[in-house]
Image 1: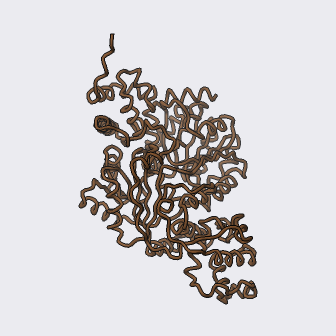
Image 2: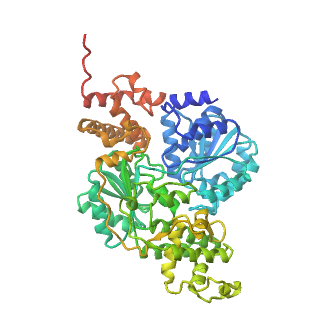
Image 3: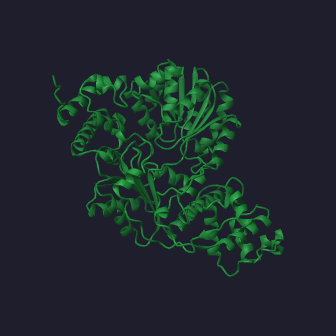
Length: 619
């Protein structure tokens, strides 16, 4: 069956080989095993269930959280000749009824639904009568109460295993730490789930963080380093999104706003412009980005503190999907922190959930205050070890640190003496000597470490502990009660091994100079250099612009987003290889049999009009 999967990958989707992790996931599904697949943004998670569905036949049901994302995936599959449908609340009842009749008749291979529609008793009973071969759950972190965007309607999906005991379940996510992965596996399948976890590192993305001073000036200084490049500027509010777009337009940038309150037609037009044109900046809320396939996003800027480490990782992952050097900048301030805390407190959730979210925010602050390489705490959050990367602001421009070894050992002593069962607030009360009711109740005023750190403020101790977590001396038990636990590295420091340097303050500092062109190229990942828009010459750039304009025209004719016709990666492959015949066009990455039939003629004509003539063969 894997041979059949390879054939479908090539003939239907136009790809010559699977990306890392895809084959392992597909093989497990075809062997009727349950799978949890954790794969980075842009790694091709959707192909795992799409190829499996076509190999097995029958019906595959895909659970997706967003109507727009479902509709885009269905449109993309249909352009490849795949019988895909969606039943959702944006369609008229008569349309949904007609769709269901095609499903019952066996004409549909993939059916997309939101969890709340799938998990009704009538729908489950109706699906039980059909040849269901796979259940695919996208954005599976929404199932877990530990996940960064838990959705109660997703939690109901845990009944699927008992309802369809013979059907393999595939859970997919790009952003799940170890705790969330364990919880997904436990809830969906009582732990009986094969895991395929790809590495989280995106080494081509340069990481930097600044505290806010004058955010508008700081933003413009960052963008001055990205002239004539496309990027995304994330804002916390819709109002700020509009303000940022207006500011950038005044400064001569081609900037557009995007948020959920916009007129849908205008929002879609802005999205298409971003996908199609070069050097476009999208000022957006977090509503923008899911499902967007634009390979040459050179930067992502957060003008406010993101909600969690998972959200931050997901959002910066939209940069540099072509493998060329890209940059992720974050600006944050105390006002952001207060607002994030307020959001958590105003959320309609349990006290336990709010406590978890505060701990997640603490982990993100630890990343912001990190005294050493940023990539180390970012990857450690997802359970992956890393060496200093050389491609972040701290590696390239080390911060001024002071020796905090004695202070760190005082914290470690308190954590050890109190049984590694308490969070940072209680640990700080002990080390500072605050005789709170909780300290009295536990008898911790009698610990030998009680009050040893009175000469430092609680604010200093909070920052120090966050940096200890970021440096790997302590770890935060988000799934428990937010308790601090000592790591092997922390035990080593207690035993006299090594030292701990920390940032005594977190004041803003200057950004490092822009990396040279050679340095940027040296930081590319192992992605195929032929797909890097950065290396195009002027003629190739003109051809790419013409192909994007043609793509937009064809997309408008069909009423679909531009990237669904062909992603940027495919257009870049056309530019690099300049196919002249249908046979050559068939070899382009992303051109399957149906797209070859439908699009070869117009794209070959556009290439012939713009590309330089082929050299005349010598006799």
